[in-house]
Length: 168
Image (tube, rainbow, N blue to C red; front, side, top):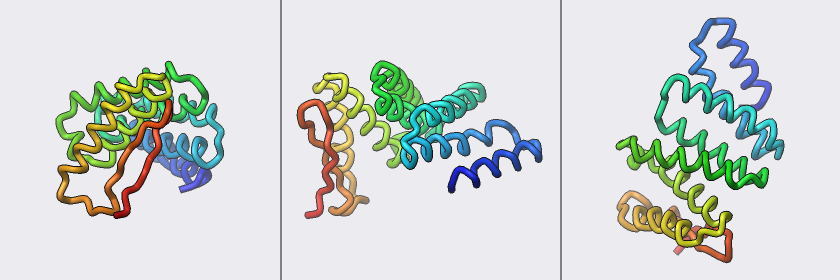
């Protein structure tokens, strides 16, 4: 989905009186596009903020909200604002611990702990970074549903976390 398609979808939703909470995923997609495709972190921040505001207003403590908080944290990290990044990632972690089903959603679970690890590494808290890496590694090692190619290993190198795919 591109910017034009997302904006048309939002216009359609407004014209057809779709509940505002339904816009949240579209705003999140726009934030991702601005962050990853266009490196326009300030515009991405605006869309992530709209998404977070909607999820907060409607108390949607689900995987989508956690992913949006992770996206916002990553975006703030790109902006060089590590304290704001930590606030968002800590909120995602808090919601995940309150949500008993989060661990079954592997994509969200790994994204959350990967972001937690990166933020804490960037803040210089290597122990906390390794703690979150260990949770992912333990979960992957204990999973019978992940083949060897898909197994992910995280390594701490200085203050950055490097993603290494084990292809053995």
